[in-house]
Image (cartoon, rainbow, N blue to C red; front, side):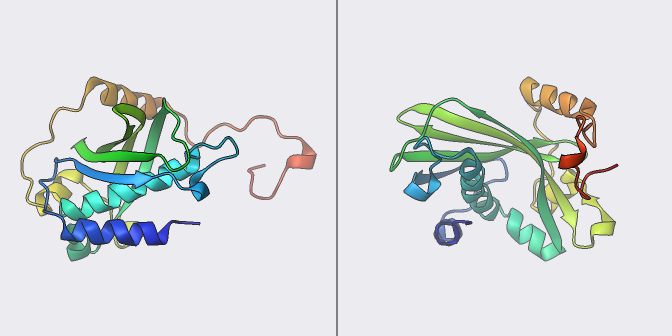
Length: 193
């Protein structure tokens, strides 16, 4: 279940916090509760993605992105992400999340988030995010247009080399993915013939 109470608490804090410039980092603190755990008594990888929402959406409030989306009838959607896990987060462990926009290209905004505990990075996520018009058929809003609507008229900072490499890898990744051979007993109407 989505952590609606935690989300509401973090959104209320973000609305009261000082505004941030579009490229400034938003810092938030969290705790790993028993309902965040997997069978190995550590923060579940799926819950980690949900907890990243609890940093990214309040960040969007503080940098003015949510106001810009609302004023223009736009929405926002995650178009891809990659997570690197390095340290376990255990029950009741407190951790700090750092969320920021790192730049954009002609199609996507790129965001980086990380979870830290006791001076060590536990995991990090790189996301590409699309700003979309209210009518799905109208497509995506160019990120430079969205940033300008937020008052950021400068070009994107140079994206780090590792982000550029990820973008290049995503460009050659096949879509839709090729399915492996599937036996008749496992075939469902959802899968292509």
